[in-house]
Length: 144
Image 1 (tube, rainbow, N blue to C red):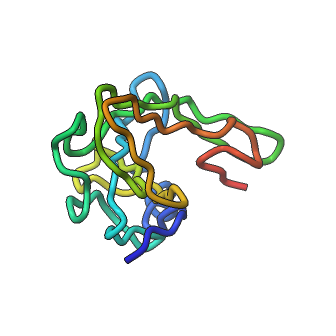
Image 2 (image 1 turned 90 degrees about the horizontal axis):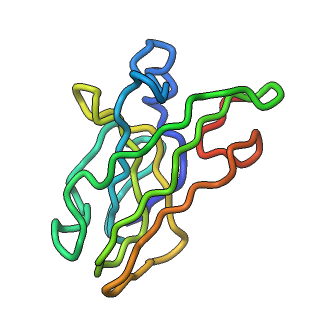
């Protein structure tokens, strides 16, 4: 099984259909759910799934954490969106990747899948997903 980092194809269409609002004031709620190494997530993922999501134990809860969205901006000719880092405290689990999805959408529509490049383990500590800088070449969501 594999997680492949990508913006989801369904998301690309849905943004043209105005189904996602990333505004930090009055926008949708976006979540980040964590998955194990048996998960299959990629550009073809259309919605949040419980298949191979981490169990609700060890400091993790189903559907993960709600993300704090940074209102989209332009960096030169590239539209970008970023999120604040998110953490689980008193955590004990292993995650291989994550899925960002729109928890406000009726189908929990996917935004992007992210592979961590290997299993990441935390034992009685804080597990943090750090987002890259909000710039045209680094933002987690970029539309050029």
